[in-house]
Amino acid sequence: MQADLERGLKADDALQVVLTDEDKKRYGIKSRLTVVRFLKRYLAAHKLRYHVKSFRGDLGDFIVVQRTKV
Image (cartoon, rainbow, N blue to C red; front, side, top):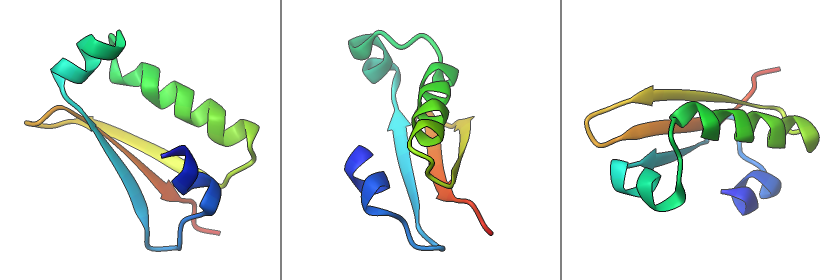
């Protein structure tokens, strides 16, 4: 995801990550908000104009990064 963010997204593009319960156990993640906070800090530190959305679905936690409209 980092390489995709640094390369840049077009206006209609979005990146999506799905974290299953197995993924969260493997990486020691207790909440999807942990990942969202990390992404928001990363985007702010690199001054990238993207916003982050997250929600819980049937397959796991979905995290979507989209380009902010100007």
